[in-house]
Amino acid sequence: MQVVDDYYNSVMSADVDPDEFVVRAKSGNRATIECARTGNTHDVLNFCHNDIFGFSQNRAVKDAAIQAIEDFGTSNSGCMALCGRSSPHEALEQEIARFKGVEHTHLFLNAWMALQAFMDGFCHLAKPVPGFRNDRPVLVMTDVLNHGCITSAAVNASSRSGKVFTKSPPVHVHSYKHCDMSHLRKKLKALAQPDDRILLLTDSVFSMDGTIVPLPEMVDILSNYPGSTLVLDEAHASGAIGAHGGGICEYHGMSPADILARGVNPVILTTFSKFAGSAGAAISGFSKGLERLMNACPTSIGTISLPPSAAASAAEAIRQLHANPELVTQLQSNARFARHRLGEVGFEVLGETNVLPIVLPGHVPPKHAARHLIEDFGIWVSPIWYIARPRMRAVINAQHSEQDILQLTRAMTEMRSNFEPRQMTAGA
Image (cartoon, rainbow, N blue to C red):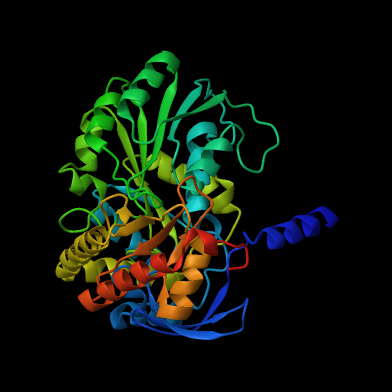
């Protein structure tokens, strides 16, 4: 462990370790947090969390979780393949099918495990079956700015999880420039072989840049490769974009069935930690075979399933979203207002959704800017510095008021003015 300890000491000396906080109390967008670095407690207005509709604190959503605990206990105590699905699991699968317009769904503890299971199942299938031979290579295309869970699944795609060696055909992984459909088209033309199974992985909304993927053009490109598969990670799209919060397909006036009709197989990743105020993830699509196959993948059969209470709360949150469409309108209105006000005072705000990547001037270090926002203004915003263009990332939600957003704008403006080049020191 000496190497680890030495590295940690170097990280601390360079002051690149993230600040840590313990949330001592929480109500709506107000929180009381304790800083591990200083031991100080701060009452803050929260622009960090992803609970975009406040469903984690919604009475009906909490009651659904509590009832599931009463009925099924705190855990499924095993995987669904061996221990069965509970009624809340089944109900959530049905809600996802209606919400996303697909037929089959498999639930996971989180998106990382869901995507790894998908890659295992799609690329390598499961145990060999007499009379069946998997001999078609897989060509994987991934956006260079995809979220870490997508990238991790892609770079580990060459061997099935839990196996050092595999007898599957080769898996070739290539990236393309961020949302650059011309580059994607050229790379597919150069790389795709007649027998390849083509798989494209992309975020619908990119969490660090706020970019919305150009889905219609992407489908046009993939339609030239009949039978290709398109995986859409809807983590920051579900609830946030589309007239009713349906995500990337609704935003572009399409449906998964429309994509399927073009000869492209849509697979949708839905996560419940943002729009649904819960936890967990789901892989959904039109293939019953894929849904059943993921039962045998290590990140499904080799670990515990989503707790029934998390499934019940996510299902109820989807019902609440359908019953209260004004929440989506309010969220999108708040996002536009925040972008407008920050732009008025000279900040560059990337993207076009409720995720606001606010690019900072070169002389403003994000980590220390975040400290000032908390300590001097009572504003909690995430600093992002492991990235080419350092930034603050503010997440706007439906519960933020105009006054909250104006408070954010004033704090960001004053914080920026407090950072002059001469003040830049590692311990500032």
